[in-house]
Image (cartoon, rainbow, N blue to C red; front, side, top):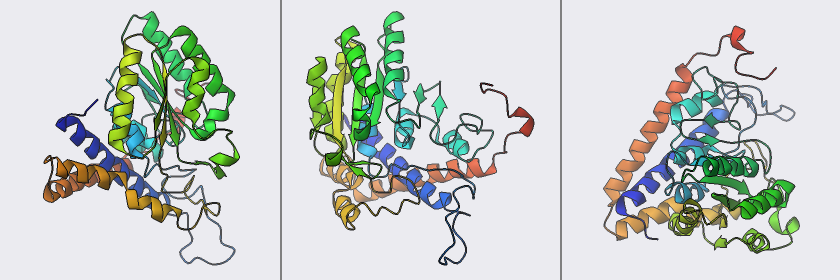
Length: 335
């Protein structure tokens, strides 16, 4: 399935937004968390600064999000992981309200009560969770709802390769195959389940091979390339939308940052990230677009500047927004 020029440009712009959003958040997140003068014995303060708590960023993993979401409609459901920003941006979730949620502001998607691992946007049918493997069952639920409503909507569950060893993975694939649910399971294989290498935790090289045990197609994308993901996702989405059932896709992708911000990454080879960046997926897509005559260097630079402006505006909106009123603490929550 070959992407049109407009689709290719959409993917490129979203990848630029995602990368700049993550890099901006990496900088903003550190505000107030590090002492003015780093000295031995002074700790990283995870609760300080404008964005308290943990932060998981997806720089490098943009192709998985845009390659799949380029095929989706607003009425389709996406359920993400604890590293969710790239999926949310690709699905159309407003960056300003998403950033405000991470800042704990009243204008956020969850009025500042959910934070970055619990983004929820019913308009764009996006949600995520901090629990490993928790994306798969809700996606099956959304797919079942589409079936019962007799709609051609599909659902996508994104998850990491570490989640493929959870019971929820096997239960969800079995149920989806049994009932031929319109769901696509997408494994982001970045080789690291927090700090555990895939070969030390998973008995097979490809999670996609497990699809055979559930009677569904298993698709392998061996490179961190937006076009390759797009081509793999197209038939899977069409299969689900036509009522033929689920597909499992595994994409070998690259995580440029730590599992969380502040992660010392002592488990990774020191030169791993530098080597990964030599095949940066944004530069790869830009070069392809220029070879095809869809862009030149000036146009690519212009799109990058526009993406930076949109991200900057989103973060400024978050900074300016008010905090929730303390008296509203128990609204919209289960007690």
